[in-house]
Length: 402
Image 1 (cartoon, rainbow, N blue to C red):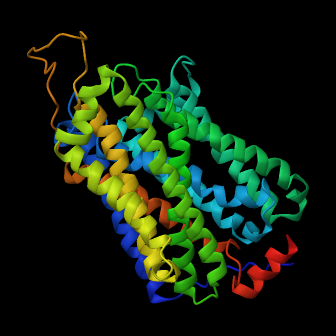
Image 2 (cartoon, rainbow, N blue to C red; image 1 turned 30 degrees about the vertical axis):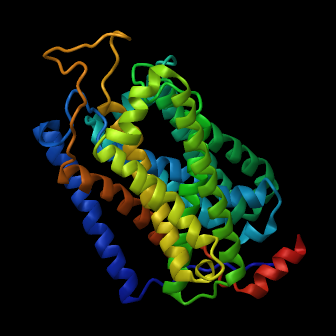
């Protein structure tokens, strides 16, 4: 069945209002980065104990979500589910945009963005960070090639091969992102091989939640038909990915509790870690997992677009809470210098490190989100990324074709 793609008109007040709001957020983000670059990280909540702050929470979330956003295209290309094929262009576009937004935050937060070319041309292959630079650059190149095979008849012969390669690459990319933490042996909260597959499952969850919100937003905003069959299939899939995320988090903590040496860390995260414990139970578990699943699997609420959008938003907020607990909580818990002994010094050894993110860090993180959405909003206006209609008739025909 031939699917017609068409650019959005992009002439409405709502479209330009959205772009204006996003542009302001992006400008505030860049301005915050310049202010931090000029005055130093002393103006942030970070110090020599908490070196990855709130911008890293946004950056890693966006990078992980980018990988997951490509999942919709992979389902169609790799697993032959033609039902999702009309959405593979938007899936590829969103993946590139989210990665660009995440890397913007990462580069500006690390400082000396002018030295980026050095990081991209000189590699220390013993460092997982160097491998991630290759993975990120490769992801851009492969997904752009993937989009070319979707949108140009000359490239259609390569569609299956490039799509399969993109699927494998995105799994490796998310493994690399999870391994940044899994390979850090100095921090007790990290240093676990389980983090790599866990981040892959997180990516399915976060990427699809973002994709659903963007998809429903564009179709509602442009008045195009989006049938319940497509939305219901994707929200059911999101519910499964959220449940899988909860399962991997459960396994991670059960594994840690099995080993006595991790009991202190687990008590910190699960019981007496202050803001980290609160964000884990309320933000990640209840708002990020349990509540969205209750909505998505409810016979009544799960068929309502408003509730599905709310569940997707909660999954995203839960993802940010998970990143905060993982990244900030992992650094806040003191490094165990000498196992079995208490350590104290004037260098904060043995002390739980405090961290209060500044408004500058929040604006930089939101700026990255805004840049990603601007890229998507602009691209769908100038190129044919969105099907003209995705009503139930179209979806049924595609499903029957399979």
